[in-house]
Length: 530
Ligand SMILES: Nc1ncnc2c1ncn2[C@@H]1O[C@H](COP(=O)(O)OP(=O)(O)OP(=O)(O)O)[C@@H](O)[C@H]1O
Image (cartoon, rainbow, N blue to C red; front, side, top):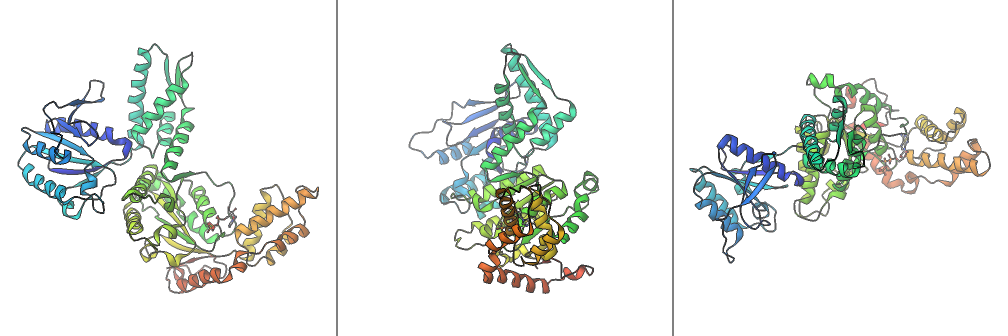
């Protein structure tokens, strides 16, 4: 802020007030000058001041009088230009006029901003453009540095909890309500960790709501029972942004031994010990294969194996209609993952969002750019699991070697894997079937996917139950149900074979398999895709 004339500050919506507050105190401390705020919504220009309780107050500037016929944006620029003295001017709402790809992009405004840059250079006046997901027009990029506000760390959240709970306590006292905070140091840390991924203002909102809900004749108590509530609150907030906080997988996956082995070798890299040694963090895996082969199921299990929280991102559901909105949603999601890290970030069905088919606005290209930059820059332990059915539809930038740690093809299960999958799904209903029966059925289910084997197990359990033999599944039940299921690989053999062929040729072109000479290619259901 000391050296830049104009700054473009990217905020996350509810964090705006916190940023203004921070900028105000920085301007006071480092530049000894006042801070002003303006946007199209406020009636005029307001001076920002830090109140004695640490809060932010806005005071209208009485000299700022815009004649009704003058454009508000041109007027504020002129006002700042003519303003005598020093000051930091925070301007909201300017970005639609200076952002690239914006339908409201105005050359007049872009030119004024450039002029202002040169005019303000010898003065002690600074302008900060505050907005979300702004990508400045090319002609301004070099003049206006970009600052981004990361989501708060555990330590920042803990500090915020202390000060905000103290403030709530004082307010309660004023209203003669008993206010008790009963949190040990470790409980407070757990609470702060549970809140990772949301902004400080969202945390304040949560605490205010909780206080209201907890008010009883005995007063208000804030204790460890608040922690699961903050997780619920965060889950709701993230879900509104297209991010789902995944639940740990309760059903293990059968087969996929190479993936399991690969993960087991890396799980320790996410521990605090490895992180403190700055060992490189694994970036992630790409899982591609026919429908129902267990890619999503594996993604959930990966989080379990690595013992990390799971965040699921459905990029196609994030594609907003407004310019910049989709990219913004994805960037916010990536930031959230970074704040929650170490974690697993599962990008489901990425080919749907990133193939670029029918996308004339270039949104998918920009989203892809965001994801690629994130993957190459993020060192905080976000393990990306991308799943897709059709790898040939994916942009090659995403598949090239080094992007993911490994690109795996998840094929239809082999016979021994089918035994394992059937066993897992029968056990879910408390059913144990002799190995030789499972092997007999596995031998007859050559083209079945994991999902179809799951259906077969469930149907057999129902049949036995219907016939008054709960949990007594026979070979006959399994065989009868098998005959009712036509696997997709038979129904749409051409499509499934296309995927498998593609993977075979892709594997032959890869050197990664050669890196693993001990691996049996025959049983390797996971194959490198590059
Ligand atoms: N290897 C496996 N072990 C255990 N269960 C499996 C396995 N593969 C698939 N399943 C079962 O099949 C269900 C559906 O599989 P999943 O959704 O993971 O397939 P997918 O490959 O992601 O399919 P799609 O490409 O259609 O999204 C899972 O919920 C799981 O119960």
